[in-house]
Image (cartoon, rainbow, N blue to C red):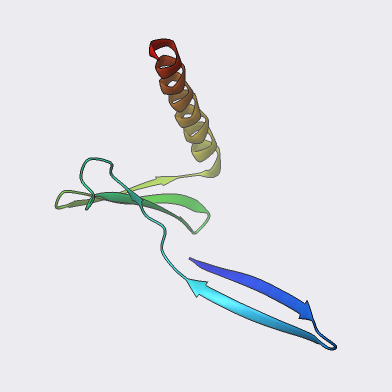
Length: 88
């Protein structure tokens, strides 16, 4: 995944710098820190790659499925928050 940052400043003259960062964003498992998932777009599909123990997996979704998945995930996160508020 590549991100481009554009930084412009002015001190008597205008200079433009392009800084390119190449990094991979992984979401680590809260129980086993060596397990993770990462998300990429490959050929117009949203691909979730992961490692669980010694097993690697991949889940591919089209845009509409990914949107539904994101909505479902948000709903489940809100349920956890509501439960914590009720118990707290």
